[in-house]
Amino acid sequence: MAAAWRQLVLLSLAELLALSLWFSASAVLPALKLEWGLGDGGGAALTIAVQAGFIVGTLASALANLPDIVAARTLMVIGAALGALANGALALGVSSLGPALALRFVTGVCLAGAYPPAMKIMATWFREGRGLAIGVLIGALTVGSATPHLIPAITALSWRGTLLVASALALAGAAVVLFFVGDGPHRFPSARFDLRMAAAVFRERGPRLACFGYLGHMWELYAMWTWIAAFLAASLEAHGGGSYVGLGPSGATFLVVALGALGCWAGGGASDRWGRTALTMVAMALSGTCAAIIGLTFGGSPSLTLLVAAVWGITVIADSAQFSTAITELSPSAYVGTALTAQTCIGFALTMASIWLIPPLVARIGWRWAFAVLAIGPALGVIAMARLRGSRDAVKMAGGRR
Image 1 (cartoon, helix red, strand yellow):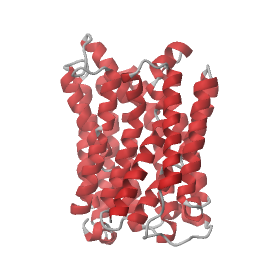
Image 2 (cartoon, rainbow, N blue to C red; image 1 turned 120 degrees about the horizontal axis):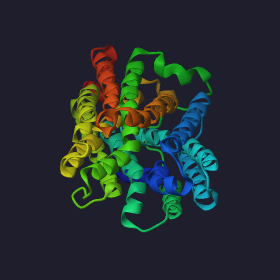
Image 3 (cartoon, one colour; image 1 turned 135 degrees about the vertical axis):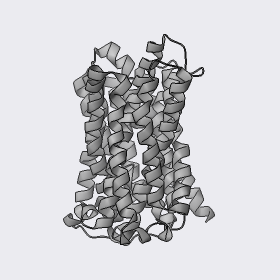
Image 4 (cartoon, rainbow, N blue to C red; image 1 turned 90 degrees about the vertical axis):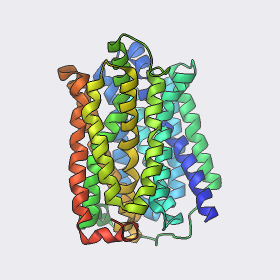
């Protein structure tokens, strides 16, 4: 068991480092807006380009069954290394939106090899406690996603320097996987290419409902992560200045997103003890409530705004790992990697709509109400997981704990 926990630490470290690429451009968006004259649409496009690349990468990977016919470790190393190079090229040689979008798209394609395969590797090390293990892994992903916001908060680096630091971190993550990570004793059987398996996640009722729950979760998650920095900055300005308990908007954003790691850890342990559907329903109810009410704090007490944002940051990601864990328990064992990748692809496709939706809502109805639309996803996700809880497939998860 000690070996499994050692691998959990190493793989989580690698995931944290590699996923620093995801929001690296979003973290320096204020500087890019000034230097390139970007509007809200261009800012949204920089994040959406990564989502689009990730979707294309996961779709191609799922259709080709790559996570089940190519070693997951190999996919992770290649994905993280190539993503670091694409992000580095943006830092070193781009001065306009068009080429930046192309390189962010390529970065997203590469990240498709760095994220879903990690969950498959972790599942080979844990049968008991799998929810907690994958929760810790997603927690590391959460901190990695927050890291680009920390760099400008604690350094005086230019936006190019910030991107280069993110690339260096991703290369370090690839090195950790290459030299220290391996498959565990509970390996999944080898698979042959089968185009039909990419759609298997929707063929059976159990995986389908788990995927629907995941879609409700994803409608909220990445739009929150993308725009919470802009919300916090605008709220502080509307308040007339000040700080978030001594933190500027970048530092507060890092705190809010990184706190999600605690939610992942607590959610993973709770789901193993009380059940996947129970945890996901509670987490989505809480995060959806935060989405609905955080706008009411806009321009008010920074401490209150930060408190609600912190609770949202913890709960919005607390359930994420459990949808993936459910897929590993409900899908055919030979195609777990393909099922995970297909689920991830569909979920990230949905995020493009919610990310794009927030700026026009802000322009039309303001920050006070814009985030409330994100509560729709968790509400529908709770319904899907309640139906899964009542199905026969529920006993296959968490040792029979629903």
